[in-house]
Length: 145
Image (cartoon, rainbow, N blue to C red; front, side):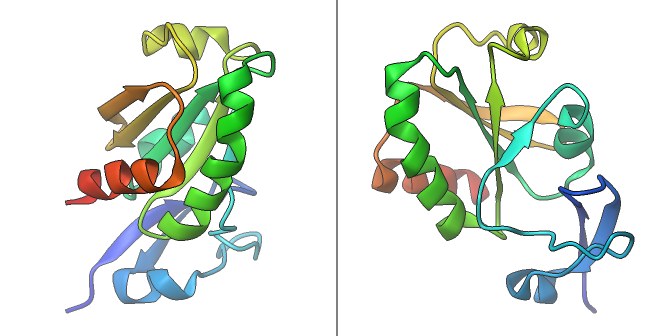
């Protein structure tokens, strides 16, 4: 019996059912035809945050950052590389805390960068501070188990 996962399209925010054995090959949205996985972090805003976080059955790792933050700028390429390695087992997304202060406050983000992993709409792990690629992917993979 093949199980499926609900994956939200980053383009139109439609929830798609993707068989687990087909996740590795990607897939396209049944409504808009865009790829479900882009191997790069998705930009989160107040208009898509709840849908992406609550409706995905895949874990979502979010980088809470700000444009003026030096460590955030240093971590940006690392987070991009992590997306290439971790998708489709985990989705990666970024939230600009300057533009979305209410969301950052909701999750108690007091220092940036802060990385949080959401499963089923809830934070299951959180780490403050910049990380290098190996540490970030190891930490993320430990949350998949």
